[in-house]
Length: 154
Image (cartoon, rainbow, N blue to C red; front, side, top):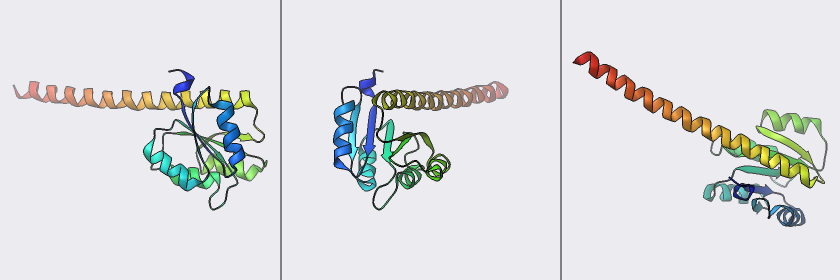
């Protein structure tokens, strides 16, 4: 899969940041943006998103709170937290509560973001592949159990 097939959602309450992000990475990835957690949730309900980047400090809900709120309903997208503030408690919360893969600071370094999104997608792909293989194994085991029961009955 080429990078252009990686679906990225970027959430930030500052429109200039959203526009800048989209302009910077639109040639590399499929970029969708949201100005709020509520808007992001609506996008997740409609689209398959592989990687989510969220600003930490937003009105109503922080990036960590958003990540934590979607964990059970949308567990698959890989999460990256972006913030202009270096707060060690936010980093710890991001990892423990929001299942965050990476923590980046603003202003972001373009190459770092690109590499982190690509690596995050690789984690996404490997997790999905693992789930698919596990499901195939479960199916094969059920068929083998059925055949074994049939052999015992005959």
